[in-house]
Image (tube, rainbow, N blue to C red; front, side, top):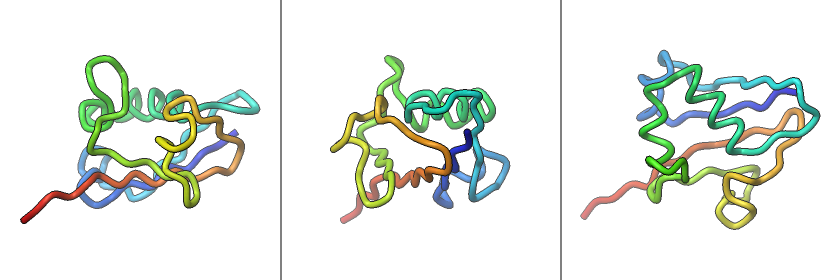
Length: 95
């Protein structure tokens, strides 16, 4: 199975400059957490930008599966199927 992760401009330098990363798995289903673990293994610089020391999604990072924020679903435990796309959007603060 394959899941596409779309990266915002601010995270692209930590993934070799690419806009989209395809994460593949031999499983029929996987979770957002498993996709992040594979993504972070392939691009280690992303790890501290996506998850904290306990492996939880950082507060300022929003991840969307379609129109749904995974925080409103099952968080990192949200189940994904072949062909799903995740969009990572860091929160932007300003004044």
